[in-house]
Image (tube, rainbow, N blue to C red; front, top):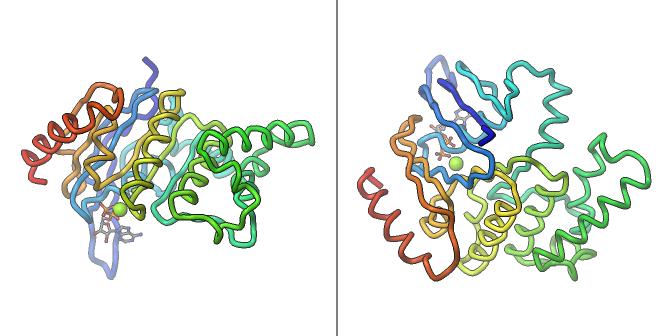
Length: 257
Ligand SMILES: Nc1ncnc2c1ncn2[C@@H]1O[C@H](COP(=O)(O)OP(=O)(O)O)[C@@H](O)[C@H]1O
Ligand SMILES: [Mg+2]
């Protein structure tokens, strides 16, 4: 199976007022193409830093990250920018969408930034794809709404559409359901599972056992180190959710959750 991402001896140290904070300490893991991986761990353990480090958003202090065989430290800033735009998707807890733009215009923004989509023929194709994504995420009828005119769950589903618009090979999500109520969180997670089944590899950070229980692997991080790597079978549907949550909960308790 193809290796989507390989982190080797990843270290990240922040220096503030001459004090060193070793946030990531020799992190090693591999994500295979098609996996849906959750990263869990206490607040401040380095989950967000890890996500930024493996997606090339933060420079590493030491170690390497290979994204589908490409060492992220070896690419030029321009190549990194194309790679990020075309092959990576990002979803955050805080939804970054531009005000005064409609939902669909926000979703299309990264598509129109990509060099692959120059010319009116390509623009038509990606516009149609934006409609298709919005339809799948059940927000098609809201496409001309301003971002202030939709609910949190709808906005987060629009963020998922935006993260998918360039058909990335991998999605990085930092607490994508963190600001949502239970129902909206379920809806968003169901969409993440669906896009994973359609072939997108996903690494997501979450505090929520319900969310993690729908993933097929959970990494547990404490103090910038991976302390556990738990494999679950691919999630098949709501009927097994409770069992998976219980199994995962037991494993997490064992890890000191
Ligand atoms: N940009 C930064 N500059 C300095 N310190 C940072 C920065 N980002 C995170 N940290 C520190 O790194 C540690 C881990 O933070 P973070 O990765 O956000 O943890 P988590 O997402 O697990 O809650 C914290 O001590 C935090 O203060
Ligand atoms: Mg965080």
